[in-house]
Each structure stands twice: as structure tokens, then as C-alpha cells.
Length: 157
Image (cartoon, rainbow, N blue to C red; front, side):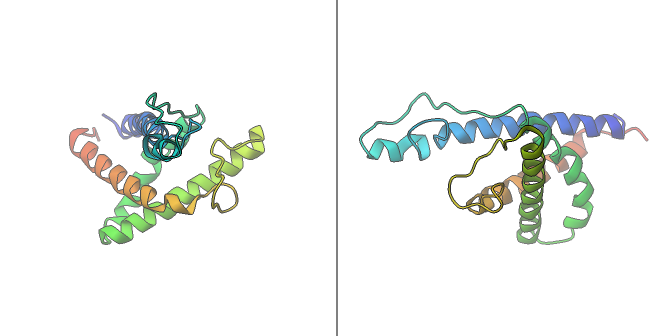
């Protein structure tokens, strides 16, 4: 596999992986339901029952945004790998926030809306600080997946 092929493979993989993770996350946390909370449990505690349909969703716009992970992480990883795991997780979180801010703003300018619409605490409409732990773990997970693919996908020089 050439470097270009690997780059496109990672773009496609993380585009699909990110969308699947988002659909799972929104289903479990009830974001596409009138009930909210894990499995709609908060709604269940309020007497409306758990939404066992576990409906999740995403936007086609998210595919290239998640796909960017496959291009950006390999660029920064030679630098980040010199640091401890907590430092790397923090760098990844801020990097994801930067991509979230940039792509959210670009989509807002191009189509007049941003796919993610944070109702609670947010920064500039596009960044949700309570998502920090999720982005830290996601960043570390992306790092581990890329390291795995580096071993599996042999490059032709």
C-alpha cells in the first residue's frame, strides 16, 4: 500500500468509524428522542418510559469531518508521542475542538446551519466543553487505531 492509498484508507475508515460512533452515542444518550439520558433513563424517571428504539443519527456532512482524523492525526502523532498519555489526550481534545470550531463555522457560512446544535453550555455555538472527556478518549482511541494500522498496512516505498 502506498502512502497515498493509506491516507485515503484512513480517511474512509475514520469517516465511517466516526459516523458509526456518533449514531451509537446519540442512540444511547437519547439525543434523537424526546427522552434524554442514558437509554432515555432520565425521561424514564420522569414517567415517560425508556425509549427502547435507541434511535441515533448523524449527518452526511460528518463523514469528511470525521475522515479528517485519518489525515490530521498522522501529522501530529510524531510530535505528540513524545509526551505522556494525559498530555496527548489534552492535545487531541484541543485539536478536536479546533476542527469542531472550524468545520462548524464553515458549514454555518456555507449552508446556514451547523449539524451540531448545542443547547447547553457552548463556546461560539460550536464547542461543547462537557464533551472534553469524550474527545480525550476518542483522541487516544484514534491514536491506538492508527498505530495498529501502521503495523498492519505495510507501505511500499
